[in-house]
Amino acid sequence: MSAYAHPGGRLVVDVWSDVMCPFCYIGDTLLAQALERFPHGSDVEIRYHSYQLMPHLPFHHAVDLNELLSKERGLSKARAKAMNVQVSARAAQIGLDFRLDSAIATNTRAAHRLIHFAGSRSRQHDMVQRLFRAYFTDGLNVGDHDVLAGLAAEIGLDRAAAREALDSGAFDSEVDTDVQQAGQLGIGGVPFFVFDGQYAVSGAQPVEAFLQALDIAWKGKFAKNT
Image 1 (cartoon, rainbow, N blue to C red):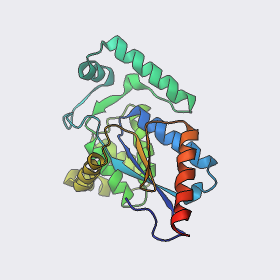
Image 2: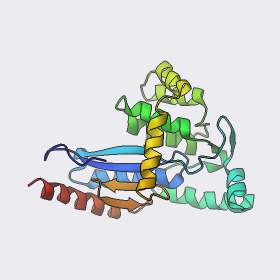
Image 3: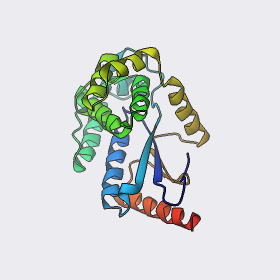
């Protein structure tokens, strides 16, 4: 992670998240709301990094989310469903439409590679947002290459190029680098936000917490460059 190339550089916020993580979507939205209120919001750059909550899930295989939670956490399906209802209610409070009964759980590594592909074309944030909606609202299989290429096309990227990148295994090393860096930083869960390479915020914190972190990081930037 770098901070600034020069005093007039942008404030960088590095974010580790996973496409299937509900609190990552919530946290990303809360950070966006904080940036709308932050006086220097237009000078903040968000960089997304890969993190898989369930890297052991098989590729090209999808399961019902409630079934997965029941199996992975030893919960009854009724309890898993109740937990999802609670999470959906929290998401609704900030304007997000979670439809977790139709969510399809799968290995998200291909989705992370697509995010890197989009980042190489300066469309990373748009891709992350579309993937979140695809999983949490649209009930799409975000491990399927056809689906992913279609999502890339929806945000204005070349569908054939996206599909070629997915099928060829492109950006696999970038995903590994992100995961390794998360380990070096001691990140054990997501979302995880690092402001200016120094100030960390873990979890989907309130807007005020993000505003405070932005303010501290911004003041630190000028202190270092004056």
